[in-house]
Image 1 (cartoon, rainbow, N blue to C red):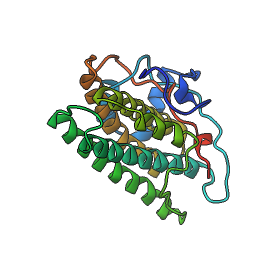
Image 2 (image 1 turned 90 degrees about the vertical axis):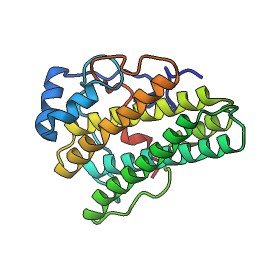
Image 3 (image 1 turned 135 degrees about the vertical axis):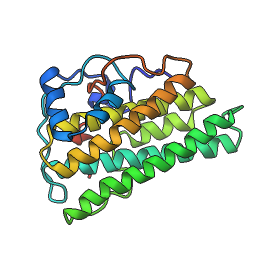
Image 4 (image 1 turned 60 degrees about the vertical axis):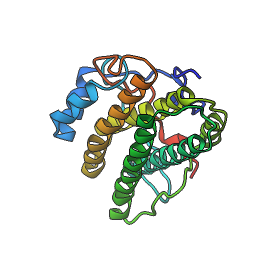
Length: 230
């Protein structure tokens, strides 16, 4: 299974490059997030090139207007990650993945718990704005991801898929941190993105790759709000 193309069809997660303001984008992120430590953690954990990307207009919907559309997307991405790790653990327990090292099982369990907490954090932002929680996986690539997991035959297949999801989430949150205007969204993105990038680093290692391959986290695989189906 290749990690060069993430599920998502025409989304940036399929490898579509985004134009980037590079240094200007990084400065906006650091000022908006107010957390240099988070930026250093992001820089060390995934991807290539320097953070950048022009803000993308966010679709307006009755339920999730403006920046809240990005929040709904983030909650959906987290729910998808939880489902993916849960299904991977079930496949491992059923013996469908062959030999699974205990350390890998422990990572899957821990990452699933992290994503559960992340989904709660994004839904808390929605609750504070009097908007409904995102409790399912309303994403257009949902079936594609589920099919990839169902056809996984070993740990490497699962790790490759999980790496795509973790990289997509980390890049989405970095992009969000400097392209939205709401403090709660910026702060939540800055707090969660480093953890997703660390998950990606572990998965690189599981796949026998350099866990920290590049100096800067890119955004060309960040998901767009149009990935949402709600």
